Length: 129
Image (cartoon, rainbow, N blue to C red; front, side, top):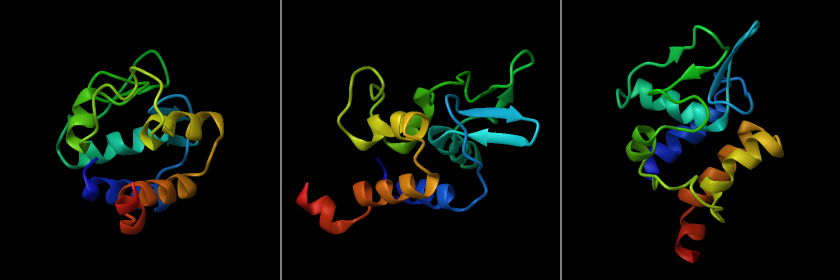
């Protein structure tokens, strides 16, 4: 993963701008949109001009990023420097575990941001790996 995008993602998760949601990249609710951890990365890709703006579904509460609503599209993964097969098999990496951390364990965006920083930005941990 590109270090600068990891930092931007972690900062966005901590910013308070994005309300945490589960099981979809972005869902429209009566109180406004909510994003899963991967949905925040998709939103950053939109803002960077890497993918077209998100499209709200006309028949569900889900929003589509580059045609996808449940996992990040390959275009977002490529922009962020993430292997496109990250969801194709069980992963022992943090990126592969993000769905479980967000949707299953319901870890807060703040905790997930800390894990991203430890994995991709902490020189002591990166050198030890």
